[in-house]
Image 1: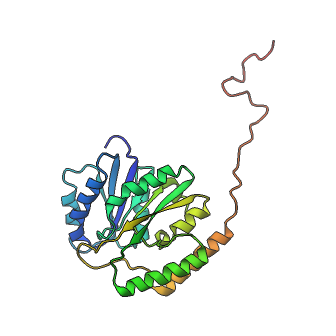
Image 2: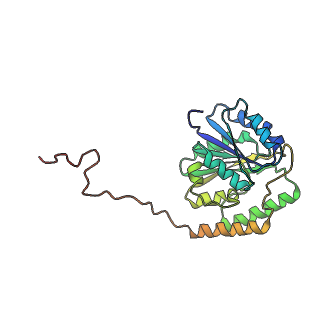
Image 3: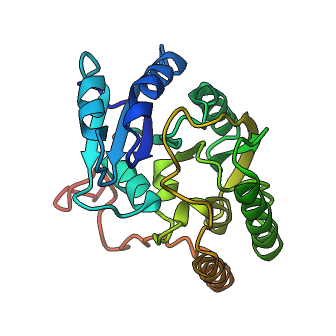
Length: 259
């Protein structure tokens, strides 16, 4: 890959050996004809995930693999992928197959159509395939978050996101950052666009990354994000003032400026 791709797709995984091959093939089909790279971040898997990733790389020069020496969580895996990415636009999706990569082009187009002031295209799931308890957790978490942060987003837990890498790097990093991205992107002065996506059952295996499973930790994160938003001040937009004694650009100091 000699030229830097426009789009970097980041997929965090932990113990998802059975989902690697099918999802890589779907991403390849969804993004055919685009300049992209795919970055899988193995968050300390203990199953056959490393072997499945090695097999998937055969013949795919655009597929890169990072591996955490120990599990750091989903936000850490996403961050590792974004830091390693060469594209100016990042797409993320979960590695369990529930997020359909066919929606990546639509999210990318929505972000670019919204212009440079848009920082994030957020997927919002329809037809959720999670169990009743997780659905209840999600409904409560999204309701509380929406009331406190007023982020105009129905479903921040959806892993399908497309955002500008430069905007992401402006955000304060903490565990569970990926669940608060709409509010934090807006905090930086960028707009957020939303697109509905269709949820699917996971292909194989069981969930490794819960959705606000630790309720009290989720509430502490929410309080922290609320504090960050309250403490944000307007960007003063600094501009360097030219030294009036310096020669104009393109003129040497020793040039004759006389008549």
